Amino acid sequence: MVFFTVEQWKRPQDGAPAQWMAVIKLDSCQSLSKAIEVLEKRGQPGFYRVVQTQRCIWAGMAGGKLRLHRSHAGSRESLARLAETCEREGGRRPVEKARQERAQAKTSRAKK
Image (tube, rainbow, N blue to C red; front, side, top):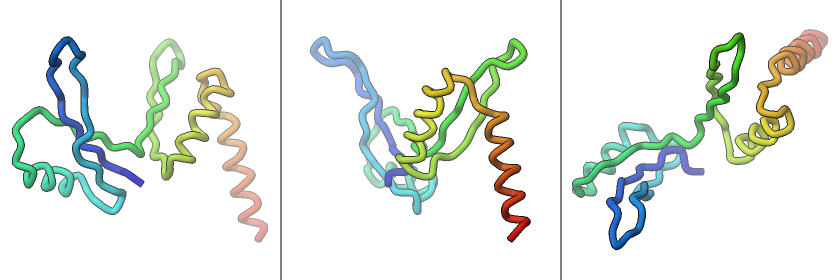
C-alpha cells in the first residue's frame, strides 16, 4: 500500500492544463524523510508536494463553525468504509453513534 506519494507540478503544454503528476510512491514503512531523500537522489529541479495518502479529514459544521476531524485510514478499504459512512450519514459525522459503539465495546471487554 502506498503511504507517501511525491507529486511534481507540471506546467501546461500545448493547451493542456497544468497538473500534479505522481513521480515517487513509498509504502507505509517509509517516512517523510525517506520521501525527501528519494526526491534529492532524483536530482531533478521542479516544484513538488508530498501527499500522505492515509490521512483523512471529515469537515462538518457544528455550532455555526467548520469543525475538522482528522484520522488515519489504515487501508484503502477502511478509507472506502469512511467514505460510505459519510454518504450514508449525509455528510454528518455520526459522533453519537460512535460514542455508543465505543461504550458497548468497553463494556464487553470489561465482562471478559
